[in-house]
Length: 433
Image 1 (cartoon, rainbow, N blue to C red):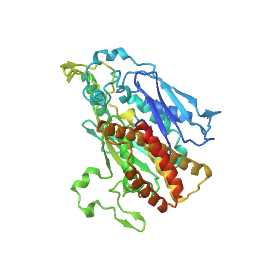
Image 2 (image 1 turned 90 degrees about the vertical axis):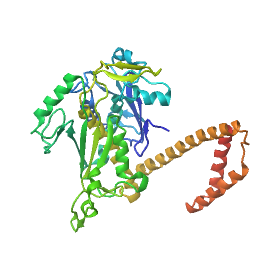
Image 3 (image 1 turned 60 degrees about the vertical axis):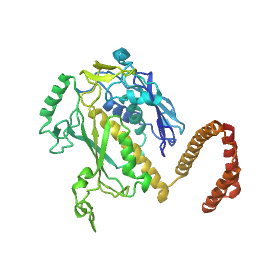
Image 4 (image 1 turned 90 degrees about the horizontal axis):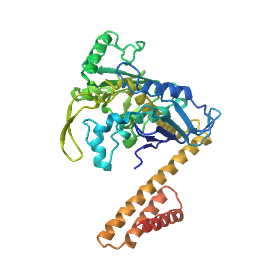
């Protein structure tokens, strides 16, 4: 599986580790002639970079974006765009005492169990620095989102909750309640002095979103948003609309009734059946405390020896301010994909480039499926050899071809084309078995 790629209508592949040379992203399927939004991306990266604010990590990174390909004279060429940011303030020596143990709350243990190796220097690929790529990539979809407005702000940090929302109240935490902000700052300073960290809850409110975005069953808009938000390292939960409060509501309390003017309520947060209703899209997500803390903790080594340790590194007291631009980036990627797909199925203002973009994505899906099929074929061959089972199974091959021909009729596809494709796939599979 290509787990480092976001392969939708707008495809990206991200790369790089916390203490590697660079963090980067390759962006495909970008139309030519688009003004490259360099300043917009720089501003977004500036919001998420470390070293900003009282409660951020002390790591000092410029996060200056460099364009390696796909842009000429300030405009996209239609070729893959490669963007990188150099890691300049990685202090790997701070992590040497951690190289043989698993830090609680980090991905060290799970990465080791999966890959039998892990990068102890700042978490490697599991580090929050990986999110630079997402923020950079999202800067190219503003022309798709148009009038959609995304507001993101914490509604809970530790024991503090907002009692009002004033979007004009600006501060380093994006906290929108001026009535308890000073007390919150004092609370966070105490946590900082302890060497500890704290989590919270972030609310998202998206306005001017059209009805009809998202698709039934496996491509629901809320499902895709949930996966995008949960793909951010520190996020551990998400709810839409009234969320978990639905458990205590009756049907007549939970339903969004309607009149001739539209919806009377918005308990479902602007999505019903996985498709946007045109109401404001509202959801909240929970962010865990930064696992790197300067407090003694218990853990085990690779040899399963019990030890105690302190991180001694630089960490965020509260990661929420830096997660906000990352969450916004992921929301933009999901919404731009949903809008692009909706244009296709509604035949709205389609141009040749739109059709080409759609067919290119289908071709990529075909190649991805073929790649996965080849890997499975290799595993089948291994099982057959180990159990001394004959590689060739003519009866099964004929049954599969018959089923494929039947499906070809439903899609009005020439049977001879299907037969040729199937024979080529089968021939390649046998080579790998």
